[in-house]
Amino acid sequence: MGIILKTLVSIVAVASLASTAALPADTKQLTTRDACSSGLYASTLTIGGKGGDDFCESRIGSSGEVISGLDVWSDGTGIKGILFTYSGGQAMMHGAKVGDNKKNIKFAAGEKVVSATLWGDGQGRYLGHIYLKTDKQEFDIGKGKANKGYEIDVGGGLLLGASGAAGTKIDRLALLFLSPKISSVSIGDIKFDSDPSGTSDNMAPSYLIQSTMGNPSGSNGNVSFTISGSEGVTKSTIWEQSSTNAFGGSISIEISGQVAGIGAKASGGFEWSTEDSTSKTNTITDTVTLTQTVGPISIAPGHGKACKLFAQKGDGNFPYTSTVTLKLDNGKSISYQEKGKLISVQFSKVQASCIDADDPKGWDSTTDNPPAGVKIVGKSSSR
Image 1: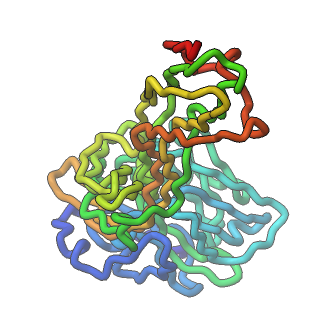
Image 2 (image 1 turned 180 degrees about the horizontal axis):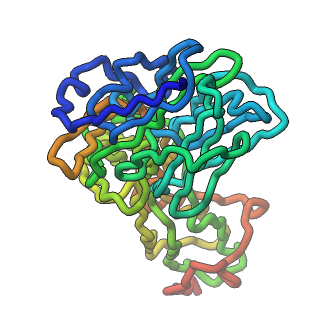
């Protein structure tokens, strides 16, 4: 007879999970069998036979990853192989990529499994069939169904992993669902791989106005003008890491850490600076208007001025390591380390620069026909 093991899993304190070696989400990890008996899972059923090599796929306690997709191969004898894809992008294969039927399912962030059923092969040797129903889609693959199958406890609907055994086929399988629901996600203790403070990397001027204007030599006298510029821009701060979207938009998130801005150097110029911030979202955008007016500036006949109004624009991409804490609705929590990057688009205050430009060949306009942004405010006659 095939194995049908039922294990009632009680929710226990998960502090021991947080104390285990925590790995960044981009570090490949082969989970151990202990990870599949952590006390976080709904009650499990293992369906199939006795052969194969044991496997365990679960990373919730080490890197916070959940299962984001399944690729399944089958034929007339049952399930041949399963590729488990994690929310961090890595995938692990068990069994074989063979069979005349192959299907895949991808779970959107926050998508919940509402029911799951497994079947044996009818001979007590292998896993025969898999059926999943989520709040968005259905997934059904395997050999013919000889009976009603075995309904799986899906807990809160979040598929964390699986355990079982495989060789050239999937000998047996248990699906691991999180029993308590995740009530909130907090990200903190952000440490940049390299502190951007004091650097000027990836900064360049963003011009509001660039104009070289001259007062023709035949002019009656000095001409005074002002130059004004205004432009709407969007500043943005994005904390990009797996946990900001792995658990869905319905779960509240709080991020506490440093954000990058542009500040003035004491010696002149601009540099990246950081300050502490708390946000309820992983993306902060702010549309602002850059504006500046300078003058009046006087130009004598036969002379010119090259004027610029500009802000420093910084496009920053700063890798970091953070501590992610998942708060569960049973009062417990899970903490782990996770890699991420801060993507920041920032602008400094507007600067003005006007220098002499007396060669008429370099003038793009004159005081008789001033460019946009330039206003003639006075003329003095030399006659």
